[in-house]
Amino acid sequence: MAKDRAKQSNSHIKGIVILIIALVFIFVIFPASGNRSLLNILTLIFLYMAMSQMWNLLGGYAGMLSLGMQAFIGIGGYSLTVLSVNYGVNIYLAIIIGAIISALFGLAVSPAVFKMSGVYFAIGTWIVAEALMIFFSNWKFVGYAQDWSIGTVFGMSQTQLYITAAIVGALSILVVYGLLRRKTGLALMAMRDSTSAAEVMGVELFKTKLKCYVIACFMTGLIGGAVYMQQGYINPSTGFSINWTIAMTFSVIIGGLGYMEGPIIGAILYVVIAQIMYNYPGMSNIVLGIIAIVVILLAPQGIMGFIYEKTGFLLLSPRRSIPEKNIIEQARDKVIESVKEASSKKAQE
Image 1 (cartoon, helix red, strand yellow):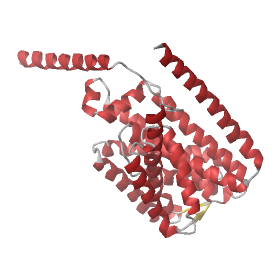
Image 2 (cartoon, helix red, strand yellow; image 1 turned 90 degrees about the vertical axis):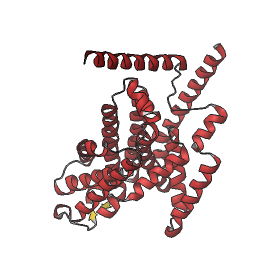
Image 3 (spheres, rainbow, N blue to C red; image 1 turned 135 degrees about the vertical axis):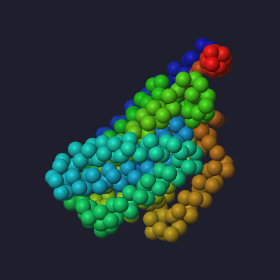
Image 4 (cartoon, helix red, strand yellow; image 1 turned 120 degrees about the horizontal axis):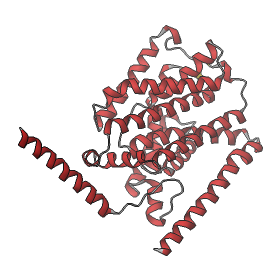
């Protein structure tokens, strides 16, 4: 036990040192370099990493595999555009308002999509996103399906865009980490592994799902605004494109589903491959698909899962050790109580 504690302590110290070094490079050394190409690539990595963290929160920790997260990228992007271009709202305030609108929209559709589970939930969320794309394509207020130039971002330097993306990326990690360190995190993972067992253990399924989903919607809307600061223009076919969710899914599966480090590794690989294949747009998805298949065959748990199995090293993912006996006893007691209550009710009838 003493050796295990010493190992955990050393691992914790190493993790803190790595994080401090990473933060110094991200917020001091890279911006000071002034290398536009490097900053552009890092900006993309942070944005895709943030998106993937939200998809991993839903799919990897809550078991809610969504194919419709692009809906909130589009809402965030259009909120930024309309508010800053048409109404002169400060661009960062516009991003926050877009995130709030995304959360409210997620709250509005949740009663319908939560009635579905598994593949039906995935298809249901995708249909919601497709419906939004059609709606925006026929909405005069946003210029129908035409490209809308976001002139308010044209004066921003690459360093400003980079810092914004880095803050959004760091915030996404903090949100997920903070959520998983609370009781809600345990409830999400219990719900992912078995909804019936989680319910027996006292997990409020709808309330837990709703909390997780609304947080993911809020953050994805925030990320969508930051994404379109970088893009500089928007239209419905790109704003609500399934390609956003494909990128998130690829990053999480390759990096490691259910590991916070997974989206980071996956986003780096995705952006690097996308940059290499930039001049071969028809081949890009084929190459990504081949890489995904190879990784799934060789390391079904993803790159981070493979590293964890071999070394036991985790930098961010919270791991809680709860004695299995206690879990079994608690579940048994809950079942016994439920049976007793049901029996007494029947006897009274």
